[in-house]
Length: 362
Image 1: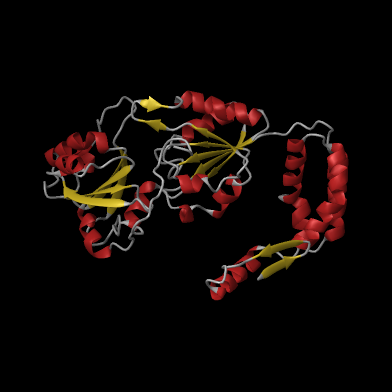
Image 2: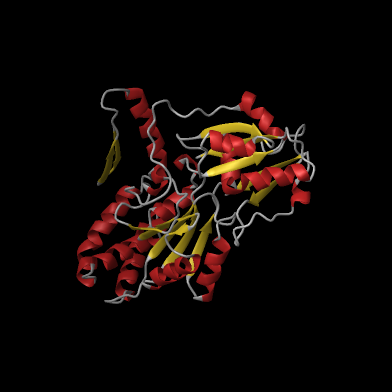
């Protein structure tokens, strides 16, 4: 089964296992690949020798073509204005410096809670454009695999008392890479602006005049709750939801417990495992019943997902007995009762997914 955009051709085969599946996949790809791609490839071919002569450096040629193929030239051709596209490509080549200075950019991308299918189209597109990927511990390995294969990968993950780089050093790394002319994908688990320190990073980029984009991601609270069959709000159980970090900058868990301890409210704790004893003690002290249900969702949305249900009174004991490990979201509230009846996601039996954290080879 061939998708023909001559001279570009894409072959689709199921190896004889399912011709119907191959046909369905071909139909989907047909809608994703405009028919004008063939004409675009022909236009590129007619300029290749001249571009190679103008730019002796491979990286310069690649960046020139990326700018052309993702810019106005391609858009003109896709809308049938082939001659105008050719003229613009001609002008772009004539105007290019022999040793052009390419301006870098940082893409601050929310990688979501773990399932690659939850990435946005924009996140995926920018990941595949990036020269360098700077990624955190909470970026799932299958998501990292979607980045451009020849992109450099830099691990800057932070664990409790073990930081690959300090936040300030990460900020300066992004600035340096961008000023070297690199397109940098800064991958963060969940959403960059929800306990992801994204605000600190873009503040540094702005101070240094670095161009950037921010791509929202599905935050862990939403993704993990959904994949666990726990609606964060429900007319019969909770009229509000609060996201709280269980690990403050000074290492304490000093929160406004009185404001949190409402019976018709769902509380979601990020990074709260090391403080579960204080968490349960304070919520009970300020008015939540000891029997308030709690869900611990470990590596949510992935094939390693594990959901452990307890209550406030037994929470600390449960964490130790069940050997719950990060990354884990803690959901407190009556909505947890719905997990038993609404759970729908079951990880594949026998799956052997790679764990979060570390370098791609760890």
